[in-house]
Length: 121
Image 1 (tube, helix red, strand yellow):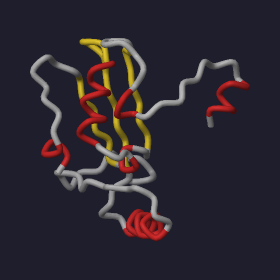
Image 2: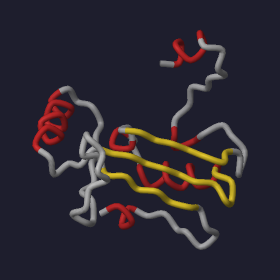
Image 3: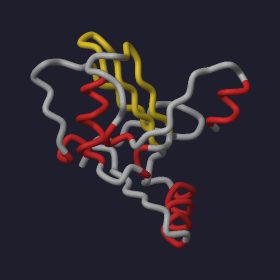
Image 4: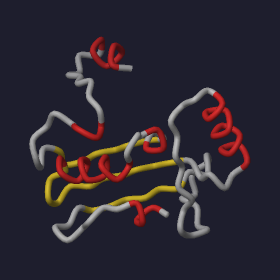
């Protein structure tokens, strides 16, 4: 993916999400699509995402709904392939209405936000 972005003339950075090489409050928008379940330490990653997000920035994390059978099958295959995956079940039964049935979570950064695993259980 990085090579494809480079060919399009985009600047790329290869880094672990748990220790990003960006200063505090660098980004206005951060979009993480179908990837958070692959993050090694989700709590540390969320803190890091919030650190690099500007105070009125927006963080959007979209993950497939693990309650759906096709997603359960993909999750089982990922485990068989030894991919690091940890999926969280949505707190409510509502769906985002997207065709894929993905659940959309949007967080606005606020000084009092304290990310923890309990925010996603």
